[in-house]
Image 1 (cartoon, helix red, strand yellow):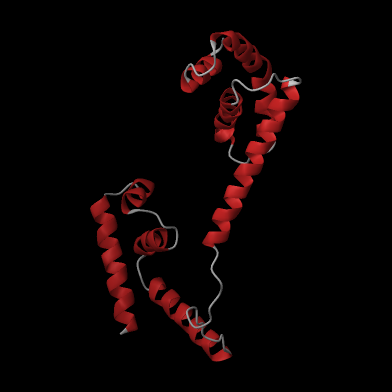
Image 2 (cartoon, one colour):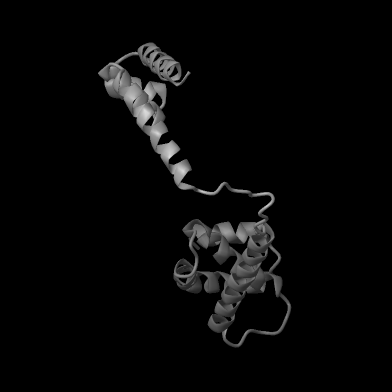
Length: 182
């Protein structure tokens, strides 16, 4: 018995009678790999494959005491298909509950007028001119932090300077740009 089979047997406990333990071990040894391939082709999150295989054998153990299975392969793959179907239904229900209709009163938007576009362009030009007035190192630090979303310590490592130097340059840039706005 391999690790996967041992893990499954201990997870399921000893619900199955001793006479069926050998049969279950044989089924697990024979069909674990084919079930793995079956699930890997059909699910997006590959980390869930082992759990899905366990669920197949768990459902098989739960049916203990019922009639004998004539075609174990067909039965196991039917269980696997049912598991995927149940999973899909649960996901659909969850997604449906997450959906909200668009309400214009709650999500009001301003019209994008030519005037608004021109004002936006003027603001961008103003910011660009204010940045160009800064020393080159201060410009670079400001751009890395505000437009590249780098943290102060990342900028310090990138430029081989101290974090306090980065902070000083950022304060200088912010003070200069906000001074130009007022």
